[in-house]
Image (cartoon, rainbow, N blue to C red; front, side, top):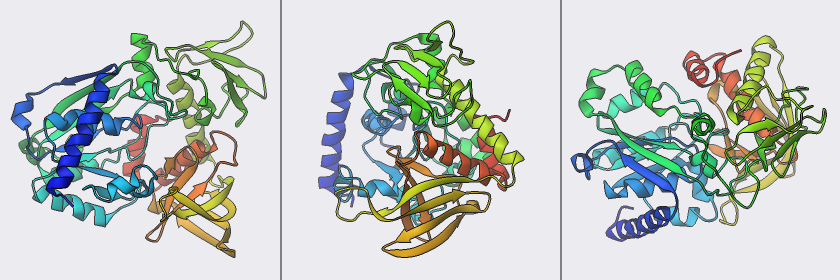
Amino acid sequence: MDTIKNRLINRIIRTIVYSDNRKKDIRVTYHFDREALKDKPIILLSDHSAVKNFSNIFADYFYVSDNIIPVIGNVMDYAPKIGPFLKNYPHVSKKMYVTDFKAAVQMVRYIKKGKSLLLFPEGTHSFCGMTHPVSPALGGFLKKFRIDVVLASTKGAYLSTPFYSKEAKSGPVEVDFFHLFTGEDLKEMDETEIYDRFMTHFEYNDFRWNAEHRYSYTGEKANAAGIEKILYKCPCCHREGFITTGNNRIICGNCGNSVTMDDTYALYPSTEKDTLPFGRVDEWFLSQRQELAEEIRKNAGFLLKMNVELNVLNEDEKSMFKPVGKGEVTISRKGVTYSGTEEGEAVSFTLPISSMTGSSNQYDIYMVMYRDNDTIAFDCSSEKPGMIVKACGAIEELHALSDSQWEEALRRVYPLL
């Protein structure tokens, strides 16, 4: 509910976050006259390069408008720390990677009431500090509302809180706000033109950006710690699931090749006998993604199997999910098939690949999906590091085989070999 009390709480929380941000090296720039948009209803779009982006953007745009309704993944209503707060805070809960008519209706109602919306079009955190695919349907979505659109673009946010470790690092983060569209722009432009302009300004790559700037990012853990969660394939022997880390070294347990990462996230061969065809993490990630896409296109019988624990949303607020069974997930052109148990009974069901463009990855553990109207999550923690990232990528690539719009979005970010 949007009450005076809630708006007061909103102001207090966002002021606290804003003040905390000022203690860090967060550099905020507005590339437009803030007074011209002050308290006007807008759609605020932001990249999702890091977990902290939500608080950074939400707090920093506060001084232009305190009338913003965030659109967030529905599972966050069940997050132990955030869920209880969200129960009394105006927001839109949206199912991820699927069509959600209920959420769409809520967004329309808020806009008609003169509210603003905060959205993260990628729908999930970036795995590797570069743009995650955005559906071209965004162009039609923005054109429907025909109100001012502001883009929040970050640089260095992923490096300050990497997806694979979640540890906060000390280092610079740049936040730039752009007045990307006026209502008149959206009225005159077609959906494709809107999408193209958005993507041109939206695309980011933190590792490429810092290869130019050479800023240092430091924390209690080495920067390489945990990177096997996203870099699952050795670029030398091409075996999967053998990458380990120690201090700032990334080591393949199969062939022994070793790579060193410095405090700018640059990569170097550890010794003269070691090799590395890439100098950046995003190049390594892109290479393994391209190989996955090639495999899926050439092999009609592609299968990816994982041992998982079946989970449902937890209502008691102690944790986001609760386990209800164990079994095996098989990802194929047909869909995502689960065979195992649920509440002590043997079950088997398939979620069609045509019904989802991807899967949200929560905590590097859960793949979130939807069975009918119910949210389920597959706990993949028993698998080798990085397999959940491969699985999410496989679902995206498989869906693209029969969806030309999604194929366009993928290839814009992940070009084929």
